[in-house]
Length: 259
Image (cartoon, rainbow, N blue to C red; front, side, top):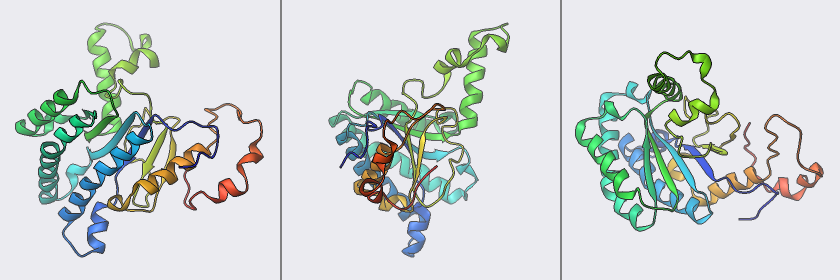
């Protein structure tokens, strides 16, 4: 992949894996086939991110709002999650991938909770890319549970004693840097209650590709777009020559862009 600007590649990428159901509908196959195809896509994207030096990859696998889907589809998703963990964890371990799970997992049944705990424990010693699965996760839930956990550790103290720094350790993803790049597939342009706190200054790339079709080449397009971004963080541009990004470099970027 060609580097277009001085921006280093992101150390943390978050992905909203959208489009499994539409992928299935286009092929006149059951939704479960689309979800299974999406699960298979995860392996190639994890591998591609690891090869490119990304240290953290977080996938929005099941949101707190997904319980609203038909019971049959939810049950199919739970079964797919069990299958994925049973099938992939040994391979993750062999390739140095550390698996983390964030979200309110207490709503899952006891066997799935145990499998999640075992999978994380089995890969905890690995030092390669950290793959985080957000399961029954919502950004608003994460903020609420962080505040409640802080309050439990500081009984009797007013919220005035709390600041961003003191609250940070209580978020589900306190072990990772905030994501520099969000990718959402499927043609939608929203963040759907994902990492609301953590994405205050995340660059957002929206792809028309449905998740099962999101190849490493499309990942490279997102990384090229990110590399050309002028990340000001509320300040002024750090680029001495903004015009350098015009012409051939920008023409090579995908037409669909982000905010």
